[in-house]
Image (cartoon, rainbow, N blue to C red; front, side):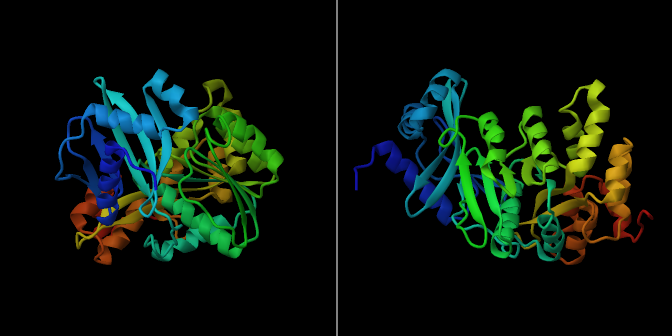
Amino acid sequence: MPTLTPHTEMMNDLLKLAVDSGVSDIIIKSNKPGYVRLAGKLKPIDMDPITCPEANAWVEEHTPKMFRARWDDEGQVDFAYAFEGVGRFRVNAFHQRGLVSIVMRHIKSTVPTFDQLKLGEKQDALIKMSQAKDGILLVCGATGSGKSSTMAAMMNWINQNMDKHIVTIEDPIEYTFPDDKSLFQQREIGLDVPNFQLAIKAVLRQNPDIILVGEMHDRETFETVIGAAETGHLVFSTMHAATVAQSLTRLFEFFPAEEQLQARRAIAGSLRGFICQKLIPTIDGNGRIPANEVLNADATVRNLILEGQNEKIQGLLESNSDSATFSFNKDILRLIKAGTISKADGLRFSPNPAQLEMNLKGIFIKS
């Protein structure tokens, strides 16, 4: 085994301590001790401060060669780091006030199941969506909301139950999928292909049944994804948006005003659904549980989008009796009634706490 440099040995010790403690993220700021995020809360580690030269030396040592120019020229870089026996980490290194900072997210080695993510009865809605023949499925939420894990659980279910050729385009690869009933091709930006644009352009020539795009970056990516959906492919991707309404707004923002009619037709024709997610602390204080807002894009939803009546979709989420479509408030109410989360946390995470208060009193919007 090669001798480790002092800064790598120090960082590995920190990563091992963090993973053993069950944290999700490790945050390094030059001249400060390390910080971790445990069950959503930021906590300092009892250690000596990490100097800027130590942080910079670690980044320069472990940034892949093809990304070094990006670090040198742009002052920020993304890559994956693996520590044998501990795990893989998604790394973002950057400068702030002339000093080096590093944020690392632990990527768990085993692909999660619906049960492990505590999705409970909601998994039926996700399984229904996973069985779509074509179209676009978007998993949405803020950074750290667990959307990548939820999408991975859907891929895991497909892998165990369906024979599909799945091509993923990720930056970097998070979960690695063993081939089961399905066959996976996982392409990492920078290592397997220079950029998203080239990977997206090539993917339709790779005979996929399902395409997973790590994140919906821009209009070009979205238009290519629409093209894939229209030619009989099922496309999964993630997007930074808090609710279904915000997700729809984000999609239309890809198109200028004069192309909104064309956008409505394209989105209505290709969209199969949204799964939005937040992580809420459990009432026992031992972790967090997902709360979801799910929209199954059935004929009614597609007609509303086509007619430009997006504002009516929220009412549909609140009043729909279909188990495949429900609002955040419906799911949060269920978690409060089950004693899984507190009322205070439910109201804090609700996108509409006043309405949730009414729901708790038994008052609901009628269909």
